[in-house]
Length: 144
Image 1: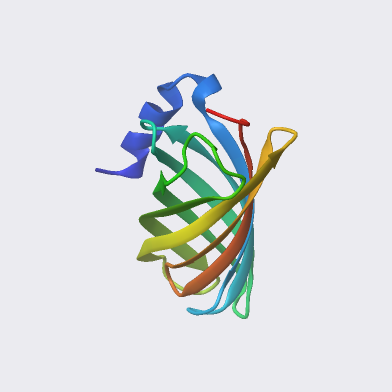
Image 2 (image 1 turned 135 degrees about the horizontal axis):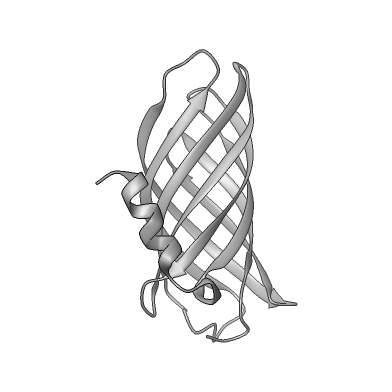
């Protein structure tokens, strides 16, 4: 199924159930790049959040960017502890100057930090077009 078919379905979900996020990632291959981006997630049950994000930045080839579609599985979805681990996967499309679009599988592990002022900072590491490490800031509730 094409992403253009899925997007209207995700936007049809009530806006109050969506959570916005911003992120900065370093990708260590294909070529190495640093990206800043934003996206949103939607709860798909107690433990799973699905979403999309887009990012743009720089690589040795010039302007670089990507679009990710993913699902995250949270081990502490009710935020009973300050630090909450999660893992996930999905698909990523990478764009670099003078190169064709490349598609990769995406897998990652992360940990959500403590919630302060309805915001949580997360650290994430994974593979998707090369090794990547990132910091994410997302909307969060003290408890769900």
